[in-house]
Image (cartoon, rainbow, N blue to C red):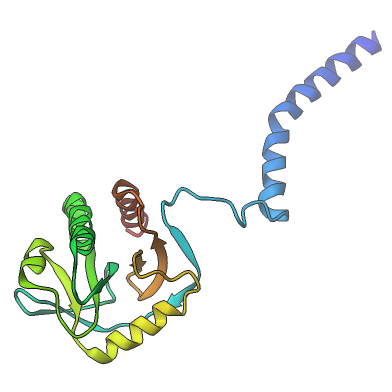
Length: 193
């Protein structure tokens, strides 16, 4: 009789352990090991660690000459050579399409082209990339370029993301799918509300 009661209790305890052990094991992995340090998250870009403080600077929209601030919105940054070729035009077009695809949330994102060299982008290219912002001051151009270059994996063909507080936080390497960038932006906007 006692052995049957003991067997029943052992079965009950083993069934309970089957349910609780995965939770205990996951808790141990997350809080007491380096389980997550180099794991790939759900983001499509590369998180920049540590975050690089960019700060604020003035931007302008060349068509209507309005002045904007770098801080306050999520900012997609692309580097443009002074002679913008077809690949450069396509990158500006891609960024515009991502921005348009955000729909009602597009007002939370701005796009900045950092033009390397003395010449500005041609007016046709600016019209193609409606809403594209440029740096207002040449001193900001040098300062920003040096801050971006301080990132060890800097590549001027990549697209970068600056948060609303002026921190460089994510890099999208050349060839990153537009839908991946769009999903990241939608998630960031949703979680930052």
